[in-house]
Length: 621
Image 1 (cartoon, rainbow, N blue to C red):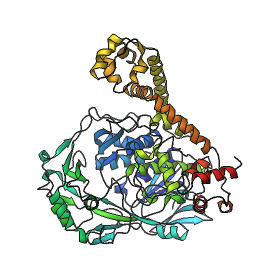
Image 2: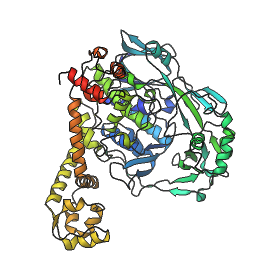
Image 3: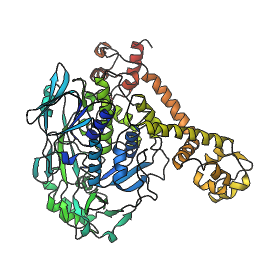
Image 4: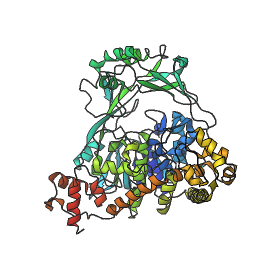
């Protein structure tokens, strides 16, 4: 019935969609198998993309030829750049999306790719021969042959939904769980675990009194995620902020004895950084209120997502408590919040390409690896799709370093440290974040993916080359341009910055705190003329490079030192159990993870600096 595919992707969430298009745009014939063609790229939780560190990931996915940024730009209803009061390394784009249009746009873009085929059915197992995956089996008993398989099962593997004392099988509200795959993988020798996540109730926006809430408008003008020529957002929908209260908390506590969170029915570990409302009022009993973000689900729908009110309490308790929130007194609930437990596989069982160590050409991406969030899933899917293609072509793998991308940090953390709770990306996880800004993702990554043959990014490369040329020209201009005291001293005094006694170069002036190019241009007409031929994005990048030149250079020196360790390869045949000078824990971890380099070994939890010294001696260094 089916011819052999190059890559089979199981699951059509954010990871699965990116895996499918990445493999297809590398040249592979792809089969995307999903349990429901109507829920491709569904936003199962909040209707938003990006946020702190997550926004950087979306821009990186876009720079690597992924579609998440493009889809977001076409379907967003609000855009905000977070952390603008901090340095540019912390700036993080976030977009509120139209949930229905987001999924529709993703499906249409997938259908436009002639190398992507679809099949609607549950995958119940893998076909494995001689330690290599050769296809998948479906619930109807059909075998689909494939050279590589990417599993992106999300929360569907033996998923159980909890609402108060009720529980039932499901991978998402209204959809059944996936069975069979976990059991087979465990038989093959994989270790599995359980995690949990949750979602808040959805309510009828017509029943809310927005006048009693704080309004949260988008940025003007609105920004965007993609480096391609996506449409600018002309109008935006506001979000709102509401707050819980002591009365709300008291009502929620009445349901604690029936909460699966507190009575032991949920065994999975939940996300520390996105706790349920009952978890928040239990853990932070000293706080008399918590912030709620009231987020519209789209342009035309009245459905509203109550961000911050994730709950698995009985539905009547959720409803009664919500009606005590100011502005929600007459609210109507569309559906209650719930918790969901699901299987995952500790990611230390993967190589840096996201290929499993036990079965060749089998890749895992997304929540199956213990992560949480659309953005983390999408980035893993993209990397797994690229590497699945490269693996079957027997070409060198595509691996991003920690110093090259947040995606590199994410995957490196997962495979070397593992995770005992749903992993979420933060800027603090990236030690080189001044280099990994959201504004330079295309400069960092597009040339890398262009070099491995990704199709459809020719225009992106032209834009990258133009941008790099413009940045160099602006930096040269600022290093040569002199500024007279009379021109800028009035401005400097107005911001309590020391006046200049004599002419100085523009780059020195711009390196001062609180001196921005936007402000200083008003006092220097020659500057406005010199920059007139460059676009805003190129000018901002040049300004950041000049302003943070010292920090960037020091960071790059650290990267260069670490890269020397990354160049010291460790052979896969090393028997660490025979290196007696290593600690017992180090021997166990090194045998389990099999690091490719000394640099990777140094980041494994349990491997100490003294263990690294032993390895260097063992290598004759």
